[in-house]
Amino acid sequence: MRDKLTWTNNELESLLRQLDIALEASGIGIWQHNLHKNQTRWDHQLQIIYGIKKELFDVIWLESVHPEDRDYASSVFQRAINARSDYAAQFRIIRPDGETRYLRSRAKYFVDEQGEGCFIGAEWDVTDDILRSEQLAREREAAEASRAVAKFAADHDYLTGLLNRRAFDEKFAEFQSTVDAASLCHLDLDHFKEINDRFGHSGGDAVLQHVGDILAKATREGEHAARLGGDEFAVLSPFGLSRMQDLVSAIRRELDKPVILNGESYTAECSIGFACAQGQEIGALLKASDVALYEAKKLGRNNAQLFTPELAQRLAKEKQTLKDLQAALRANEIVPHYQVQIDAKTGEICGLEALARWETADGVRPPSEFLDLASAHGLMEAVDEAILTRVLLDIKRWTLLDIDVPRVSVNLSAARLSDASLPKRLEAMAAPPKSLSFELIETIFLDKVSDQIKQNIRMIRDLGILIELDDLGSGHASLLGLLELRPERVKIDRHLVAPILDHAPQKQLVGSLIDIAHALDIEVVAEGVETLAHAVMLTDLGADILQGFAFARAEPAHQITARLVASLRGDRADTKQRAAAPAAG
Ligand code: C2E
Ligand code: CA
Ligand code: CA
Image (cartoon, rainbow, N blue to C red; front, side, top):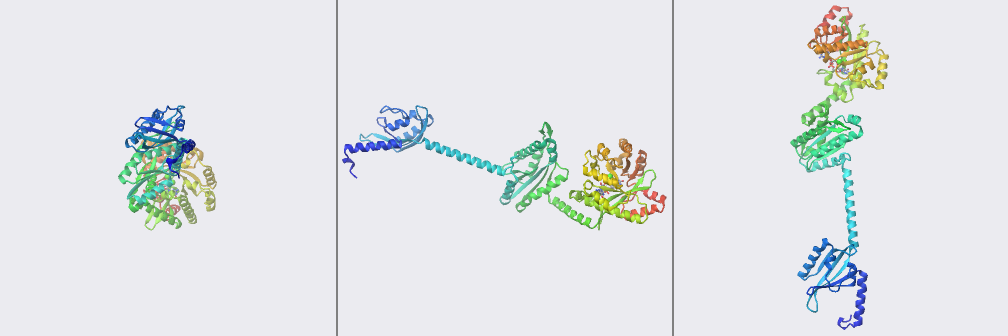
């Protein structure tokens, strides 16, 4: 390489031309600023970048800088001046044609041959780079946002915005390993099917959203509300019992405020079970709150129940009872006891009601101790079948004893009555004609009777079995249903019968029911006849048949056999005397 000092003018000129070409090709503009003289030179390229023609020494740079960047750009330059140091900045300019461009600028401080401080700088347009990276940043942001949306959708219920089941399970698992204590409430909307029926699908959705909003508002930092599915919700909390009690009260208070659905005011009702646990026990919270919820539902809905060990114990006992009941059914320990029915005109036994009893080694258990359980677990049909089978067996035995068997009334649950296989079973059982009557619970006599039930009832009648409407006046039957099914008999509910001696309106009501039944050609049985005074009054009111403790309680088959044999002996006076004597115990 040759020494710079020995370059000829020609060589220098050629070098400068090459530099010019290179600068033009790179789009870099060059400036020089003399601090002492306050003069700025721009080369041709820089004037192109700024889009202006500048007089040789004019200092007009800042006028082109974007107003928002002006303070920044001048302060960076000023700092470089003060420190006599290098300068680097990026700012926007606005060109005379109105276009905004981004420039990057680098400069070096030096002292020229006159000993004056100067900066020499290069400036170039980075607008395309900046716009491209801004675009990339926007795209990245959008991608992140849509990822967040997808994550939210995967974790949340679309309708209520609460956590969904999967996310809730995750939170629950997380709780088990991270918190020392936790509480959980489990909610289930009551009558959700009816809401859907009454207000349509959108009404149902609106109620679910309403509950969702209430839960979302009631929860605090650290608590998680979820829709577990259908009309089931839960709130998981890292706080203890008193907080959970407050939370449950707050939720119930809000639920009590009505919402407007299709222009109608509606108050949503929820059953709530809640539970608290510590440490190892937290894993069992879901089950515990579920047990409490089950109890809340059982206690008539729209209430909240706290899980307690006693509750668990009771449910465990229920479970055991259910097992025992199943075994009892297999062992034929569910048997009928019989309560006599008396002809109001003659005072003679004219019928028997078969009432289910559970005979255990420890004594006899009444239906109140096992029928609800049987009903809740689909065992009602089995109970009814067991009783009917045994009743037919007893009728056969009495017939063999030459006893003039009175008609036996057997209670038939709604489940059994709607069972499609009932007619076939009845035919196979071959009950003797006029030996049976079926007592149907009042609810069956609602306005709408299913075709299956109608068909079964027709079949029952064809077999010569009477149809009785049980518990008339207990609240569920309708006159329309009564007209449609036309039972042969109605039984006036014992709760209506009990007060007739002391309350004239009750007496009138019973009298009217008897009159209506008679007008429809329906025989009337009065049940719950507890005293002879009742018997006399009911007879006066026109009741055809009387049944109650005034005559006898339900008795086991062998005792009834003795009763029937006595009446067979023609020992009428004796029978009447015994039947009329209030039964003991
Ligand atoms: P229900 O059909 O109304 O039966 C009459 C109930 O009243 C019987 O109670 C009977 O013991 C009681 N009772 C009779 N006389 C009097 C009286 O003078 N005063 C009072 N206070 N009560 C009297 P039980 O045997 O405990 O039966 C209760 C209910 O269980 C029955 O009410 C019936 O609904 C149901 N049930 C009983 N056995 C069966 C069955 O085999 N199948 C079905 N599906 N239900 C049954
Ligand atoms: Ca009955
Ligand atoms: Ca009854």
